[in-house]
Image (cartoon, rainbow, N blue to C red; front, side, top):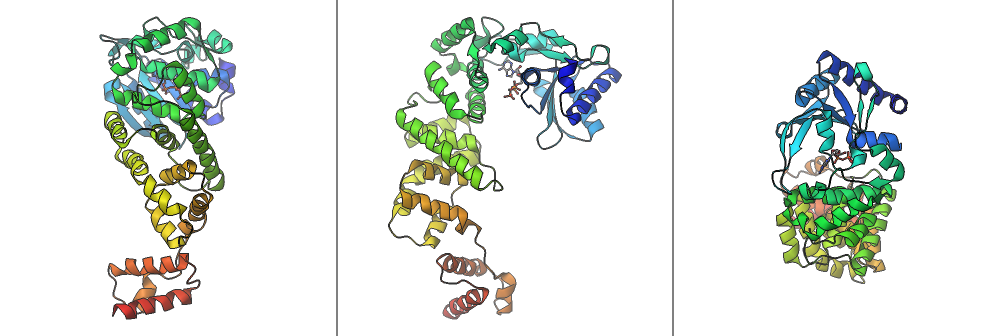
Length: 425
Ligand code: ATP
């Protein structure tokens, strides 16, 4: 595998040889594993280095992060750690472990192990390959389950018959990798997946784990392709029993897809959207508010996420009514949309075909959202106004006038302020 490693960017190669040197001096064998090895062979860019340590993974991560002067997050319970390097580069370090599932669909019991044990606990053959980065056998390829052959044949294959029963989240992972790489299921794996689904194994999993896998699915490059396969293979009961991927929902999700590309194309420098959340809200839009609340409770979303999910459902009718009007002042459009997140605004734009509504949302992003006043607090002060909360009110009034085209220059803004304040006196 040396020739594969040589194709990596220089900074990754340096990082790998540093890890190998530290492994040697700390007497802890280390290996590249998992998705990193899979993508290395596939020639797919992957900046998440996955390392397994035969020894103490956390200690190794501490040594590595010190050497690199990089951030470190420890997950003591799982004996893993993450070294954060640059914005897009991180190293996941795990202690080689042996897993045992005392109960299906529950978290496994874990003991220390060697590399082979660690590979045996993995989900699919294509994720269970390793490369030694130790001095004595640098580049040695370890493939106990035929992962390389499955990669070449484009096959998703579990390592043993109980894989989906032990950990049903692998059902979702299998679909995710299959759709991402355009692979097929090895026939027995497909049979086992369907069996686990018939046994409703996903219902036995802790919902937060399902949520995390669902988020990963929606973060994939083509989430619709993922959802279509979920519909075909397992349906959406694991989210809510009333949920389906009807023609209407699919059309809405397609519209969401094009609105997201519109936003990304047009505003590459603005805040990054939580794209997965937009798709998720689109998917569950067919449900009533009570079911949506139930999902939020079950999946324990973060507060900001739940807020956006409920905001869309609750506020949608009001916004549509207002934004559809024949006449509406820009200041009104601004005050309506300003309180919403970008995610919710994009959902509203995706949901309705009405040209007025679309144009108003576009104007909001293009003009209103970035509109600034010429005047500042200092100008108000100069006019003899003592600073106080009513400064905000004045700014608000002037901004509304500016949005509606009633004032255009700094002079105009100042005149308006004088007018407002004389009236206040
Ligand atoms: P991605 O490219 O999406 O990051 P990945 O393969 O790196 O994919 P992770 O979720 O980061 O996926 O997991 C890292 C590795 O841990 C996987 O390659 C796999 O070997 C193993 N793994 C993750 N989840 C499971 C699971 N539920 N059961 C068994 N092994 C798992």
